[in-house]
Amino acid sequence: MTHILAIETSCDETACAVLENGRALVSSVVASQMDVHARYGGVFPEVASRQHVLSITPVVEEALRKAGVTINQVDAIVVTRGPGLAGSLVVGLNAAKGIALGAGKPLVGVNHLEGHIYAAWLHDASELNPPPAPQFPLMALLVSGGHTELNLMTDHLSYKRLGATLDDAAGEAFDKVARLMGLPYPGGPSIQKIAVEGNPTAFAFPRAWLDESYNFSFSGLKTAVLREVRRFEAEKQPIPVADMAASFQTAVIDVLFSKTMQAARQYGVQEIIIGGGVSANKALRETFLAQNEFKVHIPPLKYCTDNAAMIASAGYYRYTLGHTSAWDIDIQPTWPLS
Image 1: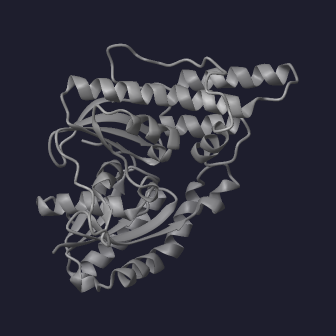
Image 2: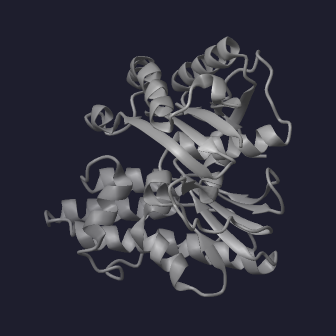
């Protein structure tokens, strides 16, 4: 039995998890900074790194305690190396190096985006009948923060990027549009909540199909929302926030769903994975799960946003395939998935 201890500090969540055999989650602890950053309307990098320094030791200790293991019973220490905020990444990587060096354990640096994909492999260790693992070949739709991309996977750790965002990613668009409409941060949950009360066809917002391409673009959609907001303000009319949110959300989902399905058909995959914070969106999940053409793996909500469990899963496969890291590895704030 292989135990992985993973640390994740790429943005504003200080997280640690213990995982068995790549899938069975024994413990997961997340110290969220959401309330701290809400007053700024987004993540304040310097504040985030200071909070990580305060939280990292108790979070690691709590994860080990909940798992009922000691550091000596762990086989490898896995950590997010990037992409992310430089100051936040430094805290996690240095903590992982110290733990691994002190305990004489191998160190494995993991790409945060890869972690979001591997969230699809997770299940709680207490589950008597865990869901089957995703089967290759598969299409992975990654919708995480500043990243929106489609990757073809034919095996573990094998990625062929078919398309990516050319400007605003889906997650960025949600945050920016929410701010335009006066909704609180983070934008994704705020838009989802109020969109339930709105008419998704009230506004004919554009879809950037980018024909013959699997790339994405949401900047034009954001601009279209801005124009509508300014029009209502100029006319001194109340902004129909619910209708606008529902119409915007539908436009984003239409593009994500259509391009993913088209790519899955073209490349003959068996299954689809959706990972990243936007995969928590209820309407997005319902849209993909309503179709019967492909089996779809979407992580439980608690594994959609940043957590160390997903990093542990990705790290397990890297560790077992011999991809350990040298002691002089450094952070990579910009690090494409490859």
